[in-house]
Amino acid sequence: MSDEVEEMKTVIAFIFGKHGKKELPENKFYFSLSMEMRWCNVMQAKNFVSKALSLNLMRKEGNMLKPNFSLEDISIPFGFRPSPSIFKFEEKDIFSRIADRCGISRDDLIKRAKEISMEKKLSEEVAALYYAYTKRKDVTEFLDEIMSKGLT
View: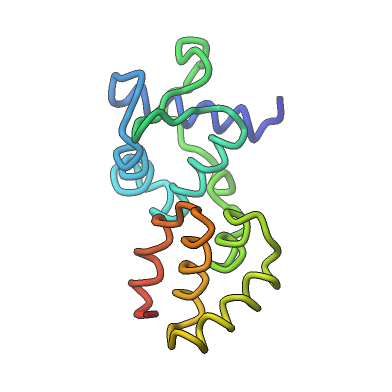
């Protein structure tokens, strides 16, 4: 396994060990990485979890996160602090992330969002969500981001 994956496993084991649990609510995991440990911001914590899920280091059951490896097998060095690069991920824009969820290209999504935007008098970002919704894709995770930018 790569050094990055090993470091991610150490981070995961650290957070679960800190709470003395073998499962944690997703929001508690984000909060622990960002607010308690101050290792990253909330968006980086969410990206970390997404990457850990995609690498099969953790699994999600309902709103609970569980490790996919034995926590006892991970040795956490005294004074452990992960390298900042472990939380640096290429951040995709909202259209790219919604397009990924819908299984279409970013350009196709933007084209369709522009059409919906004109027809329904919505912002293009909201129109992209609307398009995904019509395709029965769960895009609720993007609502807060769009609303926080005042895009309606």
